[in-house]
Length: 264
Image (cartoon, rainbow, N blue to C red; front, side):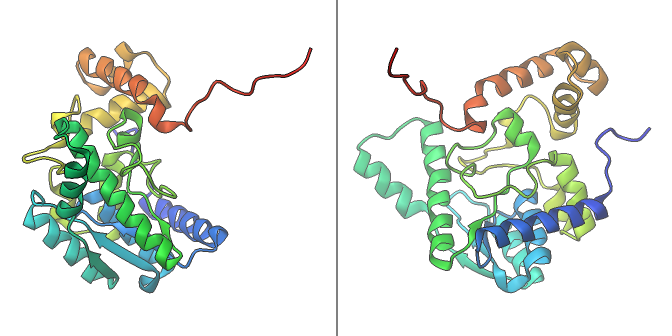
């Protein structure tokens, strides 16, 4: 039985490439910058941007910290080399440490993790503004729906080429695009603290999570039925619904009380 998440990768490539071309042209930008982590999402986005714009108009930014695995750095460098795009490498440790020292408090583990993500966002926009480019986001639909990203960090981008695709779909598209197998199969991790894995914060692996998300938000069916169809525990669906609810503020513009009417 075919997965409900199956799609035509070749057609999807054409659709996304056209979207990237149109977005960059409408902005009058000279190209894009992409934060390269060595993971599947950034690798697929970089490959798509290169096909859409040409290698001269895509710049990969590597932003390692002291806890970034060397294997991830090597994968990011090798991907950029295979695509023929230029790269910049900026270590973020000094910037993060300086910010923490200025603030005078150590902060919680999550606050420190988010500070790293927001430092990387600042670096990406520095290069984008300097070069007249856009920041191509690397978030996927799985992460967006459960809020598994940093607001104004990796969520601070100009456009999202793969924001409509679930993680498992991104992997399949990456295979179609010729992304290295080791990148496609490595366990996903934001690498924001030592030993950090996506499964530390998510209620299930992506193969299960994506099906639950699909039935909940694409199918519009209740959590109990979504869990059953995905072959998942009800607790997984319950946690997904709660994560989506609590992260709603990340997916909307900042709210306000509205304009106060004057007069009778």
